[in-house]
Length: 443
Image (cartoon, rainbow, N blue to C red):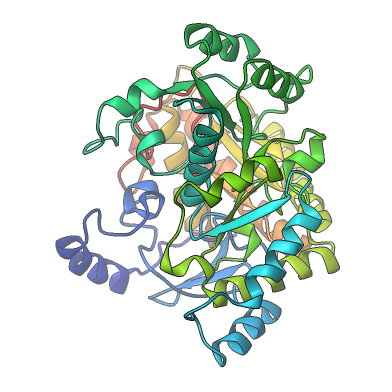
C-alpha cells in the first residue's frame, strides 16, 4: 500500500494559533500532538462519516480512536443524528425535568444488572466521583481502593503526576491495588481497617480476570463493609449490553457508564442498587446540564440501535478478525516479540515491547508513523464500531502488513529506530501512575 506524508499545512497553522491561547493547546490530554507523531499526524479533524475521518487539509483516515472510544455506531450515524435533530426542534434544556430522563433511566434499569436507580452526568468522571461520594455517604468512611483510570477529579488524580493544585490530603485517602492480585487489595484493607468506603475498578481491562478474581473482589469488599463500584465507562454497551458485569456475572453495588451509551454526545450515568443510589437524595450531585435533552435523545437512540441491530456481536466479530489478523502478520514477519494485539476483540490494545533492544515508545512512534502515512489513524488501541466492516479491517491489515515490514527491516539492520522516525517520540499521558495498571491512554 502506498505510503505518503500527508500535507497538514492548515492543521499546523491552526495549532500555532491555539497554543498561544489554549493551555495544552487542546481540551483533552490524549488529543495533544505529543500523543501522535508531531509533524506527520494531523492536529485537527474536520468531519467524520462511519469509521472514516477527514482532517482540515482534506486527508482521509480509517479511524480506530473513534473520539477516544464513545463513537460506537460510527460518526454521523443517521438514527442518532435524526433523534438529535428531532429533539433540537423542541429544545435543549428546560426549566423543569423532561420525559427523556425517565425514558433513558428505564432503559438502563432494564439492561444493567445492578441498576435499580439512575442519575445522569456529562462526563465519566462525573459518574465515578458521584459513585465514590455515594459510597462515602453510605458507609460513613472516607478511604477508597482503586484499580484503573477513573477521571480527572481530585480524589483520583491526586496520585498521578498531574496533581498540581490538588490538596495533599487526597493522596492519603486513595489506595491502589493490582488487577488479578487479590492479595494487593487484601493488604489495602489490612492497612486501613474499617476505613475503606468502596472498591472502584475497571472490571475488564486488557487481561482477563483469573481464578474468579472479580467474584473474590466483590466478596472481599463486602466482608470488609465496603461497596463495590464498577467503572464501566469503557466496557458499558461495548463488551455486552449490560456491561462487563453482565458478561462476567458479577453484580456490583454501583456502576458508572458513559462513552458508547450515546455515540459521542456528552452524557454519563451512575447507577446502582436502590438502597445505595438513594443516597443521592441527600448528598449533592446536581448541575444545570444534567438533564440536557440532545444527549439523552442520542442515548435513547443509541441504546435502542445497539439492541436492535446486535451491534455488540458485530464488534466482537470484526474486532476478532482484526486481532487475529494482526497477530498472524506479526508472526509472519517475526516481530511478535515487539508488537502484539491484546485484549477483548471489541476493544483491543497493541502492546509495544522493546525487548531490551529498543525503547517501547520508539516502536509505538514508528508504528503510528507508518500507519498514518497509509491512511490509518491509530492511537494504540482499536475502538471498534458498527461501521468498521470486514472490508475496512482487511484494508487495515494491509497497512499493518506494510508497517511490520518496515519494523522487520529496521530490526534486521540493527540500527536505532530513531534514525527512521520523522517526528519526535510520542509521550504517555502520565509519566507516573501509582495504580499498578499497564498504561493505556483512554481519555
